[in-house]
Length: 376
Image 1 (tube, rainbow, N blue to C red):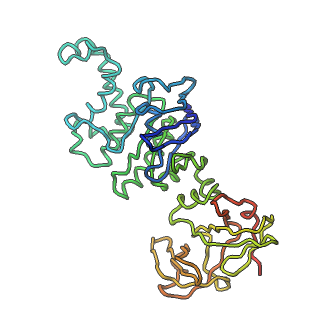
Image 2 (cartoon, rainbow, N blue to C red):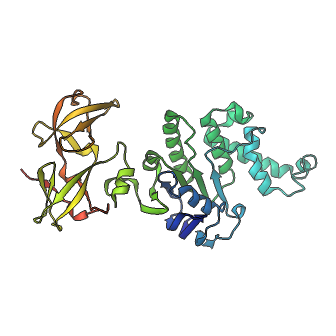
Image 3 (cartoon, rainbow, N blue to C red):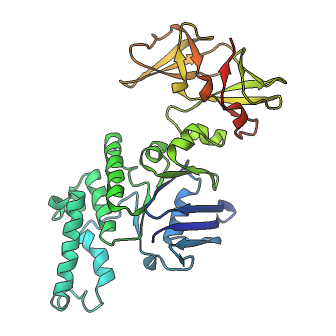
């Protein structure tokens, strides 16, 4: 079993508290992503899980074993770093073989002269394991090369291979794709997801890129300021965020937020137009969240604006629309055959079933987010 449990993990560096009692349960064979802005504590949490940092308080459990005080080498976890951390003077095959030699051979068997004679069969088995892993990652032809002769994507595969040969209970990955160009990152995301499906091993992946979290994860934990704000399936977090902070962080382009007001009868007013809620709540000012795909151009739309900027992404065009009385712009997704020209006056409508409501503290008002119907 390789289920992982972190309980009430706290960590401070001097006067700065990085983790504030984080609790996280990861199921056996699950791909979990820790995602959040820089400095939120996600890499520190991963290093505590790996044993590279010591928590001030809390417990770390792998399977049924409490490993809070266990040395990193005894946790049987494989770490893949952002920098790849390959030995530049060794070939790819030697890089992949090194952790096996250190783990599986005795000190006498590691001797450069007598070692190969004493452990010929064992070394042959380890070399076969390297070959099989290289075939899985499709890097067999790279085995004789040095890291300096490889591209970024090839180095990443080698780093993965070096982790895989150990047959760990879980893979820990700290922003492993951040050094790659945009096109290669997209390609490697699909390869990592496919690798996880084949290996059926627990993956814990750290990134600041929410696109990586949305596309690869079984579940994702959104972290900010040393806390996990929400933990769940990517689709659920995108469609049903618990707070305004999560809604703003997840999604590209970002969610549109505009001020609104709920009156004593439970009606919401946005840009001077009323929207009715099935469940009434107390009168209060609210923040309204609307994803770009839930705004649509419509000749009969009640809202009016001007196109200030166009983003052409091929299959979609994102229109940045200014609305009188609102600071900033709203981003609206449109098909190329429907998109308006730069500077054009447009009318648009809001899909009321997808309107998200947040109170002044940023907490979700779910009563106002269901069964919405626009008043005519």
